Length: 401
Image (spheres, rainbow, N blue to C red):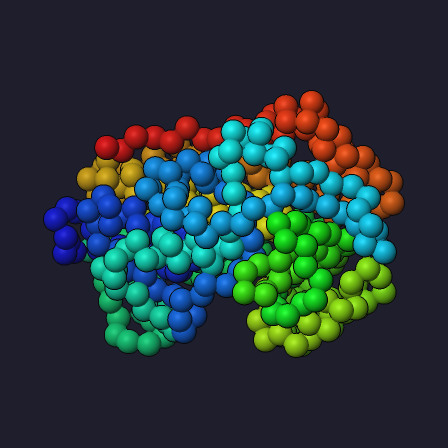
């Protein structure tokens, strides 16, 4: 079925997050006709802060949306770790990152970036909110898709950009357990208004062995909070519902001192909570027939890696570009997309897996060593070249004309 000016142009994009919106953006740029399906009842513009640098910065620059994203950005001038009394014991200044990356670095909430990408579609992409995909039948003429609401529809291609818990991956490749690599931690995040302790332009964190709680100030008197804790056997805790998840966080952090009791009070008052395991998705292939996966659905590096959004945007750009280069020949394009990115992303996953242990060390010795490293980063003569070595390399973007 072809409804556009080129073969296989009618493409269903599953998920209206950063990756899905980026994919729809690039598909539209290259002359395809995407449709977005999103299970949420409306566009979700909430979410925790993400870093934009390296590959993510390059893709945004290529899209022409970099300056729009910078207008929504936050300046993180200090990353600090504090003791139980709130006194800084380790940290480094944001100028280290900016000097090391030549100013090609900023932060913004993930919902703001998704909104920028979605708005760039100019209302020309059909979006089905409050809808889930019930089934996909890959046939010779098209992918036949059934939805929770509405009639069966046919699409030339179906692309899953629906994250770590991808419904498209489950329908096409089987249960997620065979692809998920749990990294030993759980994470949670929420945003609240009116929190009394604010350090503008600073990421403030308190750690105990095996867990970390952090906050940063946002606009409109809002504050965002991030919890990370080690959990050897997470079981089904992420499925137990928001109340049970709050109880888990209360159990882990209630006695940690600093501002933990106050933060937990705001936690109990919120209605929106992100809670999940810190996991990677490792798959032997990212496509099957007319279905392909992009971003966390295919190669999630984990929440703690700091580049999930960047890799989602990268995958969206490359997949759309390869479909353009192959003039809609999806068999050729899917193979080229994977050949282009797999080696790079597998290496990044290995780095991310090692970093998880550094982010929330499980012993007092591990905390001491992490803090000592952070103190070294605060010395420009050491921090700038070390940061440049760790974060200065990005993927060389292909040119698709």
